Length: 128
Ligand SMILES: [Zn+2]
Image 1 (tube, protein in one colour):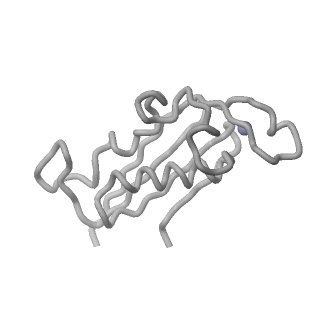
Image 2: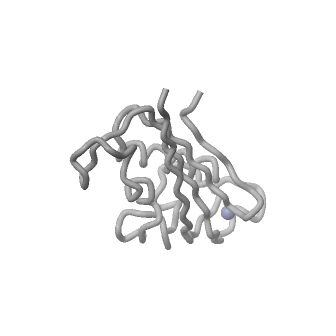
């Protein structure tokens, strides 16, 4: 079966605090989050910018979270105000996954990896 897997990476800087955490993570602080988004598909699709079915999806749809918070992304945001969940790396990855999925054609398997520090990351996927 033909398979295409798009990968893209970006970073964003944001502040957060972990509500309910018994320790320093409860204090307001920031991270430079690194994000990798991978989109796997067995078919190619048209997009808003290309009418013929020749891409898995637009790279720009995978990178929405890198935009400034005032433009709908997560850069220079206070994550606790934007996300309806506790802002652990696990939940941020889940949130980016859900919001990215809404921008993609059906049938794409999506994996989102979020680094909170250079040596600590989490992967969230709808792959089996
Ligand atoms: Zn933190």
